[in-house]
Image 1 (cartoon, rainbow over the protein chains, first blue to last red):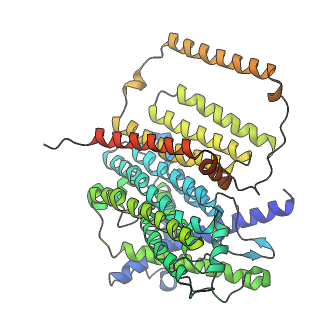
Image 2: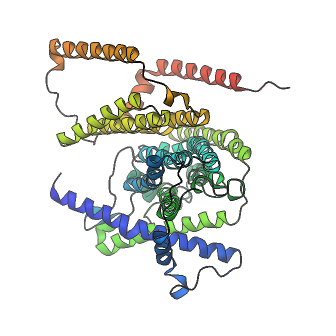
Length: 354
Length: 167
C-alpha cells in the first residue's frame, strides 16, 4: 500500500468519475433526445450552443433552480435517501471494469478483484433499493406500483443476467474481468472470433452459444436498467411516470442520472464481456508507448458509445411489453435458454478437450 | 487493511443489527438489516475472502432482502408501529442474548487455540472461487447433489402451493 498506488488510484477514480462518467451521463441525455428526434424525423434540441451542444448545461441549471418540493405525507428521511441510492450502485460498478490497458505502466482499472463479475452483479442488485424506497417513501399509489414492479422485474431478470454470462467464464476459467479481456485478445472476441486460428471449426461452434448468451445478456441488461421495452416501473401511460412522480428538482435529476449511469455501466460490461473490452485488432496495448495506452482507452469508450446508441435505437423502435408478458418472457423463456446454453457450452468444451 | 476499518465495519454491523430489532417501522428494520449485511461482507472482504463477502451482498442484500421488502410493502404493516413495547418480552430477549455473550466469552477464555493471533491469509493471489468450486465438486460432490435435490423438492412444492386451482 505505497503512496504511488494510492495517488494513481485516486487519480483514476476522480478521472473516471468526473472527467468521463458524469459528462457522459449528461451528454447521453442530450444524445437520447437527438437520436429520438432523428428516429422520429424531428429536429430535437438544437438551439443552445452549436447544434444544441450546451443543452445539458442549461438543463442542469434549470433543474438546480427548480423548487425542491417534499410532499407532506412522504416519509422524509427515506424520500431523501432514495435518489442517492439510485445513483450510487451504477457508479460503483465501474470500479472493476478495465477501461484501458496500461498508461505509463499503471493498469487502467480501479480495482482488479478476483470476483469481478460477481462484484458487478452484487452492486447492481442493490440498485433496486433506490427505486423501491423512492416509490414507497413517496406515499402515493403510482410511485408505489412502480417500485413494486421494479423489484419484481429486477429480481426476475437478474437470474437470466447471471446465467447468461456463465458460458463466458467457463471458457475464460476465472472471474476477473481483466482475464476476460486477455482471453479475447488471444482468441478473438466472443461474438466474432476472427483473431488467431480462426479457421478452427471448434471456435465457430463455440461462437453460436456465445451469440445466444450475448443476446440473453443484452435483453436482461435492458430489463435491469429499466429501459424500454422493459420500462414498466415508469410506464407513463399506466403509471403517469412511475416511481419518480413525486420527485422534483435535483432529486428527480438524480433518478435520471442513475438511469443513464446504469446504462453506461451496462454498456461497459457488455463491451468487456463480449466485444473484447479495450482491444481492437491492430492496436497494441499500452506497454508499447503511452499513445497506444490512450488509444486503448479511446477504443473502449467508442465501443461503449456504440452500445449506448443501440440502447437508444431499441428504445425508440420497440413498443413496451405488457406486465404479465414481461414476467412470462423472463421466467419461461430467457431463464431456460440461458440454462440450456450453459450445458451446450460445457458439452462442447468437454468434447473438444477429449 | 488498517485496524480502524475493522472497527468501523464491525460497529456498522452491530449498530444496524441492533436497529433491526429496535426500529418500529418494518421497512426501516429491513433496510437496517441490509446495511448490517453490507458491513458483514466488508469484514469478509477484509479477510481476503472476496467470494464469501460478495455472495453475502448478492444473495442476502440483493435478493432475499428485496423479497422481504416486497412483501412488507405489499402487506403495508401499520399495526406493528402502533404496538407498544412489551417490556417483559424485551427483558427475556436481553437475558438470552446476555447468556449467549457470557458463554462465548467463557469459551474463548478457556479454549487455548482461539486465543492466539492467527497469521494473515495470503494475499488475493489465491483464486478463492476456484478453490471453493473444486472443494464443492470434488470432495463434497454427494452432499452437494443431495442439497440440490432438497432445493429442487422445495421449489416444486412452492410451485404446487402457489398454483391457482383451475375453475
